[in-house]
Image (cartoon, rainbow, N blue to C red; front, side):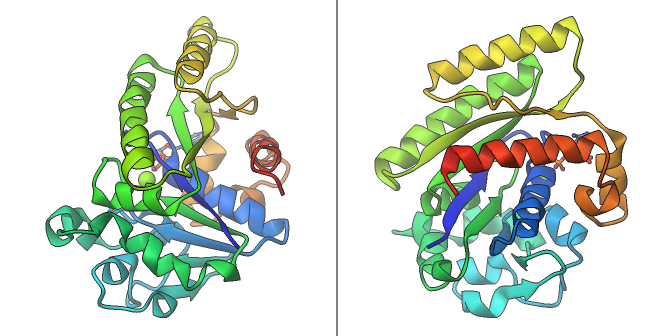
Length: 253
Ligand SMILES: Nc1ncnc2c1ncn2[C@@H]1O[C@H](COP(=O)(O)OP(=O)(O)O)[C@@H](O)[C@H]1O
Ligand SMILES: [Mg+2]
């Protein structure tokens, strides 16, 4: 049965989509069966993975217009259910009792086919994000080593507690992964200490592996590919390999 993980932070630009995509590809390259779900109306992953935008998306699945098995597409790296700009209206469209459970219910029929289901979430705490957390066993929180980014993690923790109380007792925070880090500055050192404090206050940890700031990440995205194929020997790829190793250690292979 698949381990289901939401990559979540209501702040935009912290690296959710980049991490969801490259984590999925990295695990796929280890021979794992992966399903990646793009729950963001901005559809970053749908674009990077060159998914067919004519196919049904996760939006049609959530509103009950399509069977989930009909929305799964094969891409070069793993399988994907693409996102849709209609997800921007999902809070209006999904209403009524049980609206938090739509994704979980849909995943029930297919989760045995995968080792990991990785969900990229929007930069908001909308019903799409609540569906992601309700369906997940784990959440992973990308954050930048800056004060505003870390402040947002406190708000996210309130949402985590609410979902855990009302919708999903099993939900766990894997940890905070610091992204776009510029090492060897005093600011980074201070902010890393602050992130560790914050993590312990909310009962989790900052991952030992950090993802440093490298333009290779953006270059790979511009070419709509992943960091492993774009620059196999680059430090950005080494960072992702270390991160995936730690990820596997935390959630158990
Ligand atoms: N390690 C990194 N080094 C350099 N740029 C990065 C790195 N990780 C992400 N980015 C860039 O940061 C921007 C935001 O990343 P993205 O994954 O779209 O964030 P989110 O999904 O949280 O909004 C993108 O332009 C992406 O290319
Ligand atoms: Mg994104």
